[in-house]
Length: 116
Length: 109
Image 1 (cartoon, helix red, strand yellow):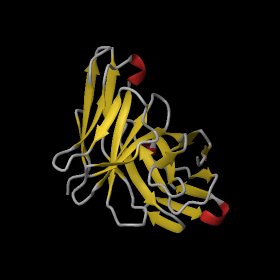
Image 2 (image 1 turned 90 degrees about the vertical axis):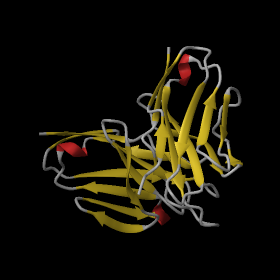
Image 3 (image 1 turned 30 degrees about the vertical axis):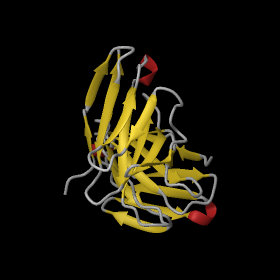
Image 4 (image 1 turned 180 degrees about the horizontal axis):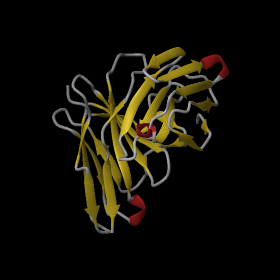
C-alpha cells in the first residue's frame, strides 16, 4: 500500500531556471495539497487541488508559481525563474474525498529544492 | 485566518522521562492532526483527533474542542522520539491545514 510519492527528493537549480515537482497521491485519494517549509519554520499551505481543478490557491505566490493535477498522472508544482528565496522543502499531501467532511491528510517525503 | 500556537517551543528530556506538548487554536475546529517530523525531515502522522482521547503505544492525545486546545503525551521517551512535533488544524470551512510552529524535542540517552 504505497503512500504519497514525491519526486525528485532533491532538486538543485540555478537562479532563473524552472523547477518541476511531482506528487502522486495515495491510492484511492483524489485530493492533493502542497505545502512549503522554509528552513527552521513550520509548514505553510500553498494550494489544494482535485482532479483537473484548483480548489484553493490562497497560499500560492501570485507570480512564478503554478500547480496542476491532470486527469491522468501526478500533480505538478511548477516554479518558474527560481530565486534563492524559493529554497525550501516542498511537501505534498493527499486525502480521500468524502463530500462535506474533512479527511485526514497524509504527507509525502518532500522535495528539497536548493537554488544556487 | 486561524492561529495555532504550540508550547513549549523547545524541550530537552532524558531518556525515560514523560512530557506533555500543548496546542492552542484560535477558532472552532472540526478536526486536528498531530505530526512528528523526524531528523530526516519526514512527516509522520501521529493522531487524527477532532475531540476526545486516543492512544497509540507510548503516545496519547487529547483534544478539548470546546476549549480550543489539544495535548500530546509522550511517556517513557526514547531517543527515536527526537524531532519536531506539529499540530495542524483546518480553517473554518476549509480543508487546508494551518500548522503551529512546532515543539522541538531532543531526547538524550
